[in-house]
Image (cartoon, rainbow, N blue to C red; front, top):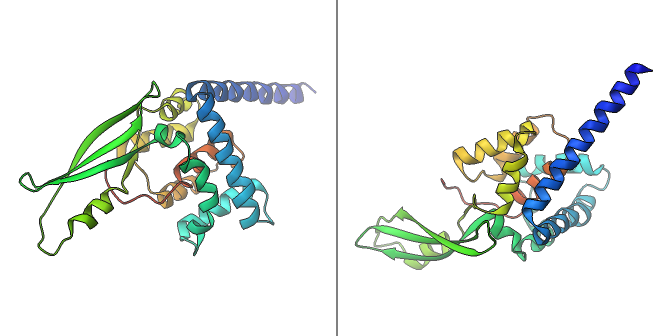
Length: 227
């Protein structure tokens, strides 16, 4: 009986600790972002997972989805479109990522300039610039280069989402590892992140694991690039 009471106490304390982490995360994220994120996760589970994997539990469906991401299952990205719309139409995406807003070429400098748009920690839109080298080729078409770089996305480390994750990362081994990975290499390709998650014994009913999948794998396939 004493052993059972100890187990119940441990489970209760763990539940309280997780509840406190969720509260901290949601408070930093902000009411509107939290609402948007809940809807993104709900749409993904109810619109996509239940239709794509009807015979699996939600936890099993999350795992099957990661396997399909790794294997680049035919038509997967198109079938995700409805789930993506909620994210793409919200300001939440600017708290998680910075998006290229404009691109221009300076031929004399042999540089391509990218201006990124993102939300800062105060919820105000801000901009930053970066450059990539430009090797002029007579056959290259500048408008195609510009269109390509306009698809580039980077992590918005100053956004509320990343600040919120950082605040609770020390108490979660995977999130702590994940934060170190992104700080080291920048944006992680969805298939690489999926492999990393499957290599660990994760709980796919976990509040934070669901949100990492919803924000880092569902939105889009990112171009290969360094931070």
